Structures are given as structure tokens and as C-alpha cells.
Image (cartoon, rainbow, N blue to C red; front, side, top):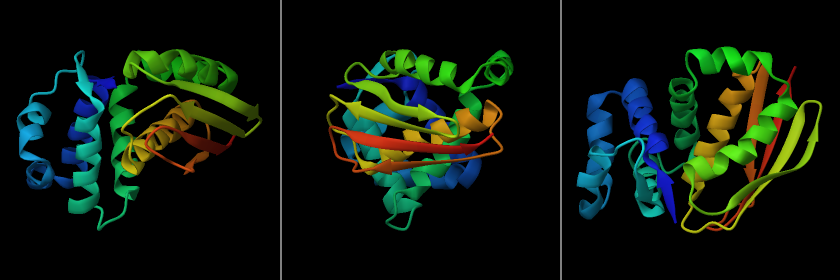
Length: 181
């Protein structure tokens, strides 16, 4: 399984913005030696093995998260702010939440070369999605997706958002999103 470098690159940018250059270097050094050269040279439009992102989030957990995966979600919130700037931010403000969920299902293959995201329950102020057909994910990667969804909701006009991951595994998870309109 592979994923697009854009999410990896923006995670690194957000990590440095939140924690500084020294923390970024510590995270990179905590990764397996064979992946270090690849992570520092990530190109946004290239495809990379899922192992690279999994190792990045493991290093974040071990270096900055005190053994908790939560820091991945916080860093990914910041990365999402970088990803959705300019005209995208304006567009997000003009669409209904249902449109966001529909587009998110279509956006999945732009970032991941396998699996699917499917919203199984959507209503006013809540949505539940199933992510299936994947391989190699860890809890940090799921937290990364959750953090990006939170920011997407906030940029669309939600006064607050909380996204949680239920039953994460290396191949699937359920994500629940709650927000205040």
C-alpha cells in the first residue's frame, strides 16, 4: 500500500511549526535508518510506502508524545490548516456538510492507493465512517486522519468538532465525527 507524499510533507512542516527544528530532527533520527533519507526528501506528488508514514507516527509517539498517539492528531490538525488554504478555505465555507462527506469519499484515492472511506451514518452534527481494505496503518495514522477531519469541519463553519477513532487496526477503523453548527 502507498500514499501520496503531500500528507507526509505537511505533517513534517506542521511538526516543525509546533515543536521546532530540533524536535523535527529528533523525530527523524528516531525513525529506522533505512527510512531517514526518504523522509527528508519526500515530494508531495510522489507515492510512498505506508511503512514510511507508520514509522513517522511511531517516532512522533516515542519522541514527542510521551508514549501516546495523541500528538499525531494534534500535529495533523496543523497540517490540515496548511493543506486547506486560500481558495480551498473559501470553498469550504460555502458547502453543506453532506457535500464535504461526499467529496471526502472521492478524495481518498487521491491520497491512498488502496482501501476506501465510506460514510455509514450522517446526520445533523454527526457522521460515522468506515475505512477498510488497508494495510500497515497504526494508531498515529488514524489520529492523523481524525485531526484533518476536525479541521475540515471547523473550516466549513463548525463552532467545534471532535473526531474519534474506534477500533483501530492495521487494516480498518471506524471514525466518528461530532460537531456544533
